[in-house]
Length: 441
Image 1 (cartoon, rainbow, N blue to C red):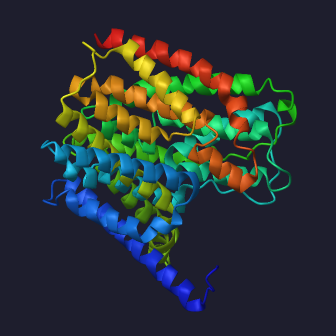
Image 2: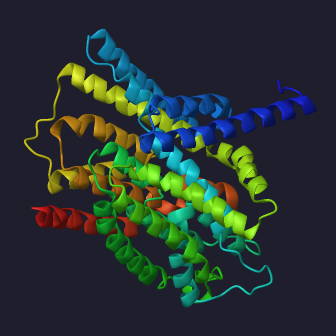
Image 3: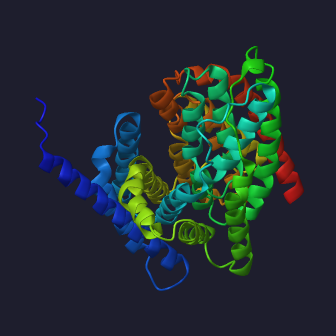
């Protein structure tokens, strides 16, 4: 029986959401303070994220809820096994392992207030193959900083007069997913750095950036050969607006060189907040703080799905690591090199295509492979590759499900539209992994 909603019910829900937003903002500040070495224990921002998660858990539904529950159950089972067998229960890791990643994702979301590409509503839509290339590059560059928002904004414009075509959907999907290879502002990079302790951002991005550039060239060439490419309706990109993403990336890399001891995720979080506030004050001095606070109250709670997913991933990783350590079980491998990483990559992409979120397979791989002490950069590169390939091909990826809900595009079609391209990129990825191992000695 449906519950009758009253004005008080809506008011209460709004207050709960706003409270969660301020908890998330507080967690960002606490996480940055912890990363800067100001004496804040990692458990404090972790606790704030968990409190916000409790308030926002009802907003998570569908496949994401199923995946989150599955990770919680498996992770808790692993922790329970370790406790019953007298092993080390990594409870602190379960509660706070992803707090820096969540802080980065929440902080980066503020960039939507200042770096969204603004387009005149009356401006004509570009058409043809040149428009396809510009849209592909545009969603890649904007998406590398403002994440999924870029796909939604460009897609809204392209679908405002007629339904989105498979070609338009594939351009957005491939362009956005390829940024997973290198962008420090993606969840993929945060997960890679968190689950490959010792991996270096500069190394991962140095390998991922040329790989993404090659992928863009291959995707653009292949998509421009589709029969309807001459009639492609693109997005009127204004690349002058890219100065903000470029400035942010420069600031983060410079700060990382000056302060190598500060975790890169903490640098990204602090720079994203500071840059957003400064640009808002310059552009809108009268209501800059109101806009900023408005995002805290309404914008941050929208990350409820990501919040619960990564909280659950922390429990999963800690549970698997605790169980493996307590059992004394190890893989029968003498080393973990490029060949083993290639097999792992193919397995993770296969399970992603079947509906398993990349964060689940990465957390599982970390828990199982950690005792082998593999090269952290090799592992980080593998994780980024698996994320990019899995997101672009799986009908169940968050991006494709969001596009299905927003634009009515059949998410099952992406496996057919992007499948051959994904297989091609996987072959390239395997070659890159072996090349990296050879160059790294």
